[in-house]
Length: 416
Image 1 (cartoon, rainbow, N blue to C red):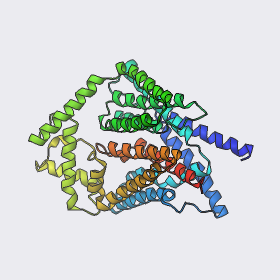
Image 2: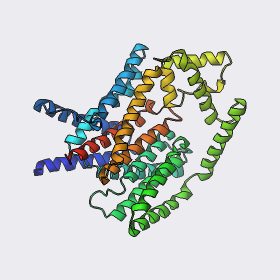
Image 3: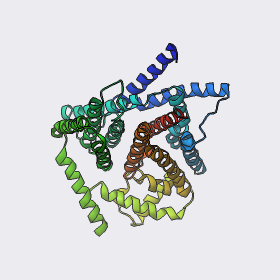
Image 4: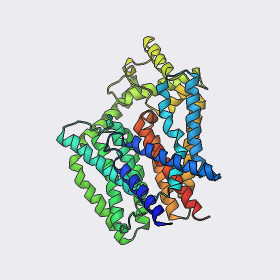
């Protein structure tokens, strides 16, 4: 590669790293990074069209972006059939430019390692911002610049989890033990931000990622590597005084009491778990009425109002938006067709990254783990919310998934 091209590649890598580092700390940074990547992708798409080069690889990992596009097109078509307002189509835009992200990463020769560093810095900066808003400004549940503490906390945790997936792949020639400690610090920074924001819906991801990586690392690590892990974990305990642990435990206890009470009596004694259970039950109840294409988003709201008027459901859910569960929302709103398109997108992603993780190749294993962690995070976040309705969630999810899948393709091509 000549000097000019190498300079361009290095510039793209640094731009990507900085963008990920600022993705939660600067307003609308996630939209900016997606737009920049799409423009770069359009450039490389034009080059491929002019040279008549193949646009996509023949294997599934190269066509995953097309499955993301198919999900968006199917769901947008259902929205059109329901005569939904124009604002309902906005959520599908990131999925439609998924191929552009793939082309930008592959043809731009993006290196995977700045992504790990960018995610680590993004989690650290999010933690600092959460601590600033909590301790200095006195905000009970910090929300960064996203307006929602749940969205902010969940995405900080996601960035930290992706960073720790790349813990054995040091950027910029850092020594492995140093980068290992930094990656774990990034993860625990994401955990801290999540706890401070009281985003309990994402907390099941914490033990899943922690057990997964610790088991791997203690199994494979040298004595120096194990020492780095211990130092990183112990250092992270210094953040405990800044975490509202008692509040977090209180929220978990309140949710448990609310869940038990709802199952026993159907009453609401708290405002989080019980209303969600009522919404999920309602969504599964109305889905069979229109099983294939659903009720539409407005139709779901209308059915809620009708059921409340008939005293068939608790009126405490009237002011909640959506059904607070990704899968149930899709079933009720867009029927089995919309749900299956969503399930196909996740199923294909699990297959692609699971296969990469099981390969006898350390780079592929790292990329596979990062992809699987991103999928797991999105599914967990979607258990208690309609994850893709929120712009930051879908932008960050699509970008990470497409960037990592493109890196899987690039690594595979390097051996063929």
